[in-house]
Figure 1 (cartoon, rainbow, N blue to C red):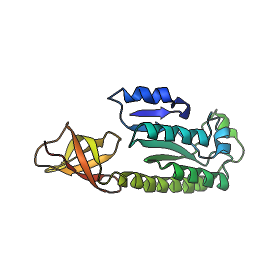
Figure 2 (cartoon, rainbow, N blue to C red; figure 1 turned 135 degrees about the horizontal axis):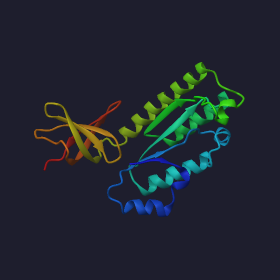
Figure 3 (cartoon, helix red, strand yellow; figure 1 turned 30 degrees about the vertical axis):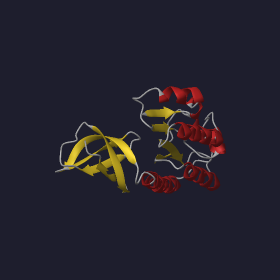
Figure 4 (cartoon, helix red, strand yellow; figure 1 turned 120 degrees about the horizontal axis):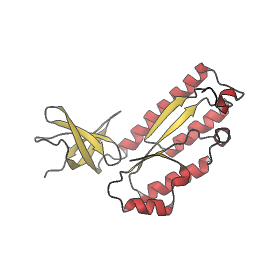
Length: 206
């Protein structure tokens, strides 16, 4: 899986090269940080939310079923309530598989620690909770989109007698019941349902 990618890393040649790399999984971690252009500028990020969305759309068109996760910071200095609402709605429109949400934490010696408009801890916690709630909602919707479809899964462990779970090629956890050992095997599994953290499926017979 590819992590800590910048939107500017995504290009047609880059995506075409990935298609020729069979060991690359269908999961990108694209760091957004904020879905508000004003906040991105204060963060000194060298992209806009439009450029971020373009990178996501290009990636999804090139790699069907791609999971996209991200990092987002709540309460960056100067982020108003309207700025945060804009950021939240943009994240909703992307449809992330997972959002890692963090409250802004000032670090000594960094310019942001001295920026005006510092957000209170209580408000940062509130905004982080809203981002986490959105992550749960969008992640559930993403998992549900695979119900009835077949995914390749690397089964890692036996959770109960005859029950195995593992990760799909696009980084989704799948659990199946099977009469023979599946640990360390890559098998195709048809997805039957999607829970909060894990999807249930049935493994194709050998």
